[in-house]
Image (cartoon, rainbow, N blue to C red):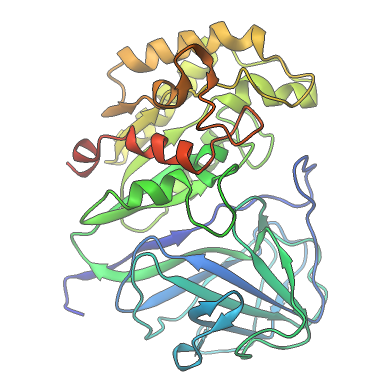
Length: 379
């Protein structure tokens, strides 16, 4: 790799606090177990580094072994690609409570669209694990130390991701890196598990000269904490601190309008959401980022009970009208019109509905990605 190469984000996974009330999934802990995780790389490079986290841990996290390899199938690895992860030269290490560690560089060339396998042996009790709760990918867990195994014995499967926030890759210096910063419509709820058909995956298939990494959190909100820290609180960490970032795509709003009702909070007003979007745009531009924003998608068919669906439609309409007409962003991608049922525009089109009236299926995620102007994004 030439001297013009630089470290950029090749994969990201936004995490949440397992000690908070989680309404959608159950957190868990580990003890004398190997956790093998599939990380689909959005971009590649000549070397890689892995970012491990104990951000929400309440005690040091002991890592008995950490290994990476290319994926063969399911939990099986391509054995000749298997490498040890070292942290300041050590293969066994501890991550302090609240901290993250970045591994030493690993000589393992990787490419965009490749599945990297991360194996962590956790020798002692971890406490509740810092995790990504709905990543639409399988994690494999088995007893004992099987970090170097070609395939895991008697593994169980879990649809969550643990103790990892990203992979950096050594890529050409002119590589364009974007961050998809938002909620479940980026993280991919409703799309096929393990198939990599999230809207961000579909967008990456359209891009040349760079890629977008996914910092979506299902249930996340723009203005207040619900599932994960709200967007204004996590923007610096999950966008500005991403190496190589020059662009950000925003998708928020639905959870501010209806999900807060589960916790007894009133829906956000149009003025509050507009102020939140404006502040994100200001902070992005102040840091030299190009910023794109999505309109708030339809959700009138939502099957979850006791949510203020009808009474928030006028707010959604007002916010979307503002988004379509404002100049605070470099571009707006109209997800609402791309996926709405033209006969019932407050509903997701039946061809795009995952079945719950609130999330997109594979075809809907593709339609969302197609709404992005890739020339504006790249330019």
